[in-house]
Structure formats: structure tokens, C-alpha cells
Image (cartoon, rainbow, N blue to C red; front, side, top):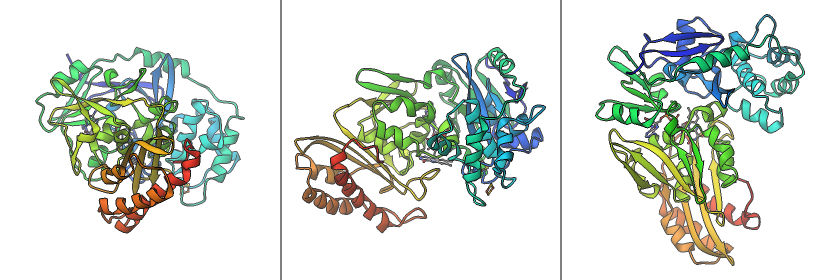
Length: 471
Ligand SMILES: Cc1cc2nc3c(=O)[nH]c(=O)nc-3n(C[C@H](O)[C@H](O)[C@H](O)COP(=O)(O)OP(=O)(O)OC[C@H]3O[C@@H](n4cnc5c(N)ncnc54)[C@H](O)[C@@H]3O)c2cc1C
Ligand code: FES
Ligand code: FES
């Protein structure tokens, strides 16, 4: 029997909801239903951070805090979690984050400041060291166009020096533990929202369901609602499914559940593929990485999805689950623009990445901004070079064709050849012939072609520092 309501903690009170539209976002719920208007709407597409809220989840008997974009998070994904909004922080007296913002002149415009405060709150509650790198990471999804970041960064450095006010951590922990994790189906005006906690229930309900949408972070899917004003019927939320949320490291392969958030993948991947892990630090923003999944990137199948060229270059496979499970090499998964081998009522269960410690992996993401930006061009190179000869080589490009595409002719030319300037120059001539990229708002055709050549040259320049983390 499926439950017909969700339960979660809004700030410090447990609430249950069953009667709202299944497409309701957390932002609209806060502002329209609860009059909690401290959480702002700027872009409604996950870009600006004005809507940042924090979600607390039970992990190993502790609460782990993650910042999210409330504008693109669906309300019914909150079951079993704590949602913290900016109104919760001042509890009798100001929170250390708020004190620091005042004392260090970090409070700028009223639109972005609540979201910035929530990113800082998340950092504070997770007890993250205020290093330069960590501060940039936590602020990567909060855009300011009025003043700049220096007073905000100063506030972050100072926030740990203030004493905290009342803290209801133990109370929240107890409440979180008390919420039952039953499977859920909410129905509202012929639309349904499903939450499953294991594969069995999901497979059963997802089969034969027409007009259905899989959902993990919603960082692509929610834009259908917030930007295109579509009504999504039959949403299947995979983010709470324990069989799809895991990272398993075996001797020869890494297996990642399709709904595992990118921010959980980054530290685990670092030991095996540091350049891949480092590239993920530029995947959207902290808020996006806390929600987005590999299953969602593969499901969207955008030619500029950042994980796709790397996964192909690493010879990864995916397990596709329908009534039965089947394995598909990612080399064969993409058919045409956003069209893949995934059939109706199938979903991606897991991603299998072979471990190869002898090869060199380069992940080059070229975008207009470092943080929170989509690639214009992406190139992943996976090479085995012995005595200066390419023994194996895979070059995969994103943003250069309608699907993430292997540079077959270029790599065939280089294989068994010497890794020298002459051969790289010839490869540069081949790669521009091999691709016919499009012009769009991100980059012109000429720019993309030139960049593909430059990246091959960059690979050559990095030859003497082959394990460099430059990406
Ligand atoms: C501000 C912003 C910045 C972004 N930056 C980047 C970036 O730097 N690089 C990048 O690559 N992308 C970026 N994206 C796009 C998006 O974050 C990624 O594609 C992300 O991986 C999608 O994951 P998700 O879990 O949020 O997917 P969702 O939005 O939940 O789903 C996306 C699609 O995949 C389908 N799907 C989900 N799970 C599965 C599954 N298990 N099996 C089959 N289909 C499935 C869904 O039905 C849907 O069609 C950005 C998006 C935003 C809003
Ligand atoms: S309103 Fe801009 S990120 Fe949500
Ligand atoms: S703080 Fe809002 S634009 Fe700068």
C-alpha cells in the first residue's frame, strides 16, 4: 500500500502534505502557501541562487546539510528531510552567519542576500573550513552583479568567530529519525507523484505508465515547468531510491547508482580519476551538484552534458532497467539529438566505469564562466602512451555535434604514432574536417572548430606534465 502524503520538517516543525499540485516547486510552496517570502525568485531556472534554501538529511546518524535551488526542486521530493529557510536562522538572537554579514558589511542587495546567507549557513552547519577554495565552492551558485564578493568572503571568514544562538539539532535529529520511509503516491487532478525507496516497487509502478517522467534533481526536468509552463503528469522520483543511490568501488570498476548526487561522487572519484573529479567541481554550482545526477545527465542526453564525453572516453557502460536489465556500452547509447537507446518505461539503473590506472585522462571544459556555466566545447582524452607512442587513445567531444561524439578519424590517425608536435599538428587538421559544429548563443561554429584544435595542442603542451590537474 502506497502512502498518500509526504512528511518533512519545515524549519523545526514536522508537517505533512498531500493536497498540492504535483508540479509544485519548493519556492512556490514557501512563498504562496506558507508566506515565507525570505526565499526569493530571481531566474526560476537554477542560475542565480536567490532562492537558495538548505535541506538536512539523515546520514550515518547525523544531519548532512545541502544547499538547493528551491525554484527547481519539486516539493514532494522533501519526504523525510528537513527544509531550512532564511526565516529559521534568527532564533531569539541572530545566527553567527547573520552577525558576520552585518559586522563585515556583507549584506548587499535584499534580493541575493537571503540566498547567500543560506549558502553560508550550509557551510557553517557542515563545519567546512573557510579556505579560499571552499568559499568559492559554496558561493558558486549565488550571483551578485551589484557590488562583488569581497565583503561576503570576509563575512564567511569571520562567521566562525561568533557564538551560536539556540540550536535545536537534537530535536531535529529525533524528528527526522521518526519519519517513516514508505513508498508514496500523491494524486492531484489526474497527475501523480511517486516516491519509491527500492527497485522492486519502482519497476512495478513504472511499467506501462503512460506520459511519465523520471525525476532526480530536477535541474533539467523542472525547467519544463518553470520555463515552459508544462504540466508534468506521472512523476517518478528516484532520489529517495536506495537501490539507485550508491557508489561501489570494486577492484576493476566503479559502479555509481544513477540517482547519486554529483556532490557525493566527487570525493569518491578523486582517487581514481582526479581530473574527472576536478571537472565535476565546475559542473553547475554547489546547489546544482547537490541535486543533479549522472542518470539525469544521461537521461537528458544533451550534446553539452559534461559527464558524457568523459564516461564515453573511459569506456563506461550503463545498466538499463525495464522488466529485465540489460547492459549498453555508452559508445552506442546516443542515437541522434537527445535520442538514445533508452526505451519507454526503461530507466538507467547504474553507470559502470572501468578503473584504469595506467592511462592519462584529460577533461577539458570550455565555457564562458568558470562556475555555473554550460560548456561551449568539451573534450575528454583517455590515452595510453608508452615510449612516446599512443598505444590506445579515445578522444570524445561535447558541443561539436548533435550528440557527444568520438573523434574517430583523429584518434585513428594518432594511434600507434609518436606523440610529437608534427603528429599533433596533423591531428589538428583532421579534427576540423571531422566535425561540423553549429553556431548558437554559446559559441560560433568557427570558435568551436578552433577550440577543438587548440585542445589537442594543449594536450601536447601538457605532455611533460601529463598528470597535471589542469582541466
Ligand atoms: C543552473 C544550471 C547549471 C547546469 N550546469 C551544468 C553543467 O555544468 N554541466 C552539465 O552537464 N549540465 C549542467 N546542467 C544540466 C543538469 O544539471 C544536468 O544535466 C544534470 O546532470 C541533470 O541531473 P538531474 O538529476 O537534475 O536530472 P533531472 O532534471 O531530474 O532529469 C533530467 C532528465 O533525465 C531523465 N532521467 C533522470 N534520471 C534518469 C534515469 N535514471 N534513467 C533515465 N532517465 C533519467 C529525466 O526524466 C529527465 O528527462 C545545469 C543545469 C542548471 C539548471
Ligand atoms: S530563482 Fe534563480 S536560482 Fe532559483
Ligand atoms: S547582492 Fe544582489 S546583485 Fe549584488
